[in-house]
Length: 134
Image 1 (tube, helix red, strand yellow):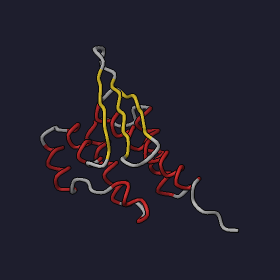
Image 2 (tube, one colour):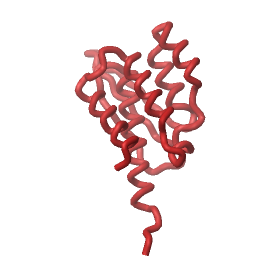
Image 3 (tube, one colour):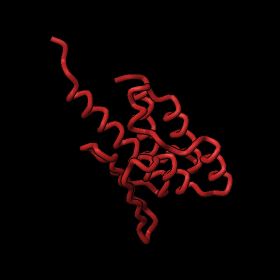
């Protein structure tokens, strides 16, 4: 596992244990992780909103919109929130087999947790199907 993948996995862990004080903190951290992605991951995470756009959305407390724009248009998404407040996010990266599903107290965090989970699954699938050196 690369250091970048380990950061992504750590992000998922933080989402699952309510490690973020705010959804804005989770969006900002995921944006930094994506900005530092290895070149071979770029097709999975591009296109997405520019950092200035994400910052502007966070300034007006539009965390869910910021999460959606951070994920970008190459993913199918589903966000739900129960009457008692728990949220679910589902992310399917277009043309990929794997998807991510995640539950959290905040819908933006659930969506980002699902996205990170989907990325981890797709990367693992890519590695499993990579040609082996003989």
